Amino acid sequence: MSEKSQMDYELPQKILKDINDIAKTKKLSASQKNKLKQLVKKEYEKSSFEPGEAFGIIAAQSISEPATQMTMRTYHFVGTAGIQVTLGLPRLIEIFDAKKEPSRVVMTLYLTKKFNTKEKSEKVAQEITEKKLRHYMETISLDLAGKKIKLKLKKLKKTETKDIMEIVKKKFKNYKMKHLKDTISVSLKKDSSVRDLQKLKKKLLELHIAGIPTVKNVIVIKQDNNWIIKASGLNFKEILKFDEIDKTKSYTNNIYEVMDVLGIEAARNVIMREIKYTLDQQGLDIDGRYIKLVTDMMTFTGMIKPIGRYGVAGMKSSVLVRAGFEETIKHLIKASIINETNDFTSLFDNVMVNQQIPAGTGMFELIARMDEK
Image 1: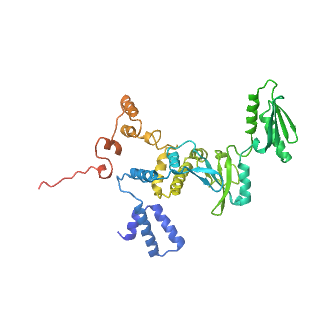
Image 2: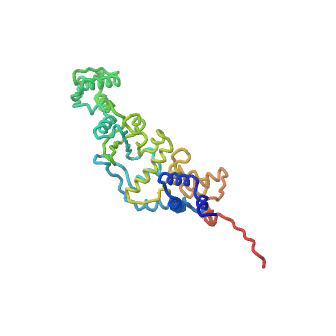
Image 3: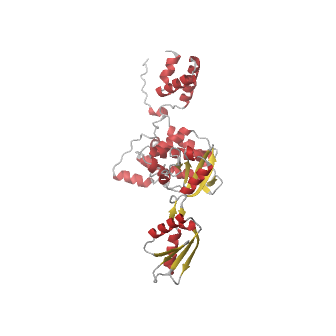
């Protein structure tokens, strides 16, 4: 068999097709194409593994060993404003434990080409920022004798003042209200207590007026000729409804919200991105294939599973493997009650009972018929 046909046999058809497409586009000669094929074959062989190789353990060790050396720096600031992002070991723990909500949720929002300017990006940032009634107020006072709360608004446009008044009336329709220029007066019943006034005051201050609920600490930064909006908040679904936002690039570090809005594949990509970003911040270079392997284990069921007793480790079929991770007595008692058996097909349970592991040379049974001479 010739060298060319041998390589064609060893490389996958998809890679061969890509090589042919590149050779055609770059107008490579036969010798150049053959050299490219040899280089690709060399890299392809580097990425392959031998049958029986325990690459799961290698991946776990390759990530966990450098992670133990990580500094305990818990956060840093994004850009020049005060959006804190959890980093280091605490962030890795959040990701692998698949926390429902990160300690600090940050959305990274890219803008479409039309709105990718400083002025327009700042305008979009203002539109999405949550604004409560307290942001529009100059003063607020309590009339204890008359059982009233008076709110003096800042100098606003007539339309803005009118919109605010309509929202307040709609939300507090059971209260008597008066509106005079830039002052709103809300009256309670005569038998109301001071506590009732304080409760109403708090509700008024926290009344949502404009923007996206929970979205705050919004900043605009420039990265690689792109104006990007960084914001803390949970309303990613509502954010994507804005035509100015590039839906193909924007994401949030809350993987569950990404899964709910964009699906499990998008959540898988965010998990990989967050792990890689956290490791890069610590100067740790880990092969991306190990990160992909762990991420696939967390998402292959169609749901996000943590690396722990309620997730990946808890799904193991082997009783001894589950017992060896956490809650030993619980798993052993449960297995004895339901008459569960252990098939000894994994590595850890065979190590526990001092048997040869089914990996490497231990995964084969070799029978040799020797000459009797």
